[in-house]
Image (cartoon, rainbow, N blue to C red; front, side, top):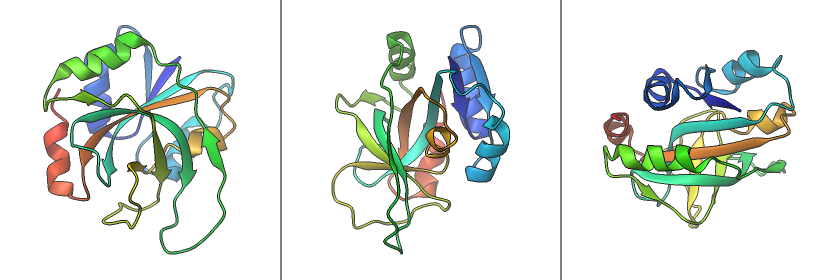
Length: 168
């Protein structure tokens, strides 16, 4: 299994926790960077995406397992594929992330949907808990057969909150 992260902050966070146990691949932020970095990987290789993300109403510091992902178009009504994700995440990964404790991390028992956007989301009319990111949908869209994901809620539509969650 390879761990996939996007940003420098995510890479440092995950490298400090798992560099001796897993190969960590940094894609860069957004869809084009993700596609360019992963397009030639073996599609049968299990991938675990880990990253910081925004949520409409989950508490900052929440560690959530992602159940499915779709591309998000808040201003248009496009019919997009919804990709169901694996939830085969080693317990040691979840436990280690939760135990970092800076800020306090809370494991959400119920998996959550993720919506991938090409822009940072500043508001939504969606009421049920949802997570917004900028890369995840591209993993199953590229044809990877085994994709799992963990997102750590960094903010609730406030970029100033985001930086506080990077400290491990």
